[in-house]
Amino acid sequence: MDFSFIQMSDPQFGMFARLSSLDEDRIAELHRSHGWNIIPTAKTAGFAQETALYQKAIEAANRLNPAFVVISGDMVEDQNDPNQLAELRRITAKLHPHIPVHWVPGNWDVGITPTPHTLEQYRDNFGADYYSFQYGGSSFIVLNSCVGYDDSQAPGEWERQVDFLRASLVEAHDNHSAHIVIFLHHPLYSYDPGEDDSWAVIPLNKRSVLLDLFETHRVSAVFSGHWHKCHFLNHKDIQMVTTGPVGYPLGDDPSGFRIIKISQNRIEHQYYGLDQIPGPEELALPGSY
Ligand SMILES: [Fe+2]
Image (cartoon, rainbow, N blue to C red; front, side, top):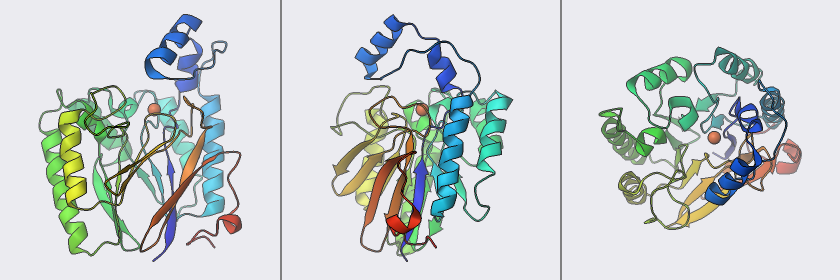
């Protein structure tokens, strides 16, 4: 069955306000160290910009009528802030009720170093932090890459997740899935599968475990976020796709989302800025009526 879905990433309620307080020296330093393009602005509070952007993204999703929406992490800056969560929920509720949302945990949702407490809080707010689902003859597996990034304060979480991943991959083959698709927050690597650890990617010791499983089980594509800009790699015929943000852009890509079309033999996708999203007729999306 052919169908399409939308990947949104990093709506990150609260980020515009946090970055608005940075001085020019810090902005220049973050540009040098991380490659981030931060625009100096007067100090703001709240999350009015995130509201406007996420609302636009949800309205566009309603027009496109995808099979589902996946949000690949960093929903809010602070999951202890009830206002950020309430605003995320208020706008998400405007999505047509027949379009499911699949949440993926990001580092701002569970912390750079997740703990049993932050994971429990996330599970209360969003549901399971790793899980799988089926759609249209393909298998989709959501992972909590934050535990892969740093599991030092969450004993056993990484091992349980790898066991789950291994079992889900076997099950996907048993189901004769047309494709196996992975969603997680952190990209696995930037350019070289053996590259050094950094803020941007899953550390090498965990990365190699994931790559090995993805290769062995012939995963079709891996969709991530985290960078607030787009990136694409072909890893041994596995598409490794990083999607820009609904919220604050840190690279050249504007705030936007990715539309992915799945058919029996291929997976095609395109990132669109929120002001450049075509109509459903123009895209000829399978599953859009
Ligand atoms: Fe983010």
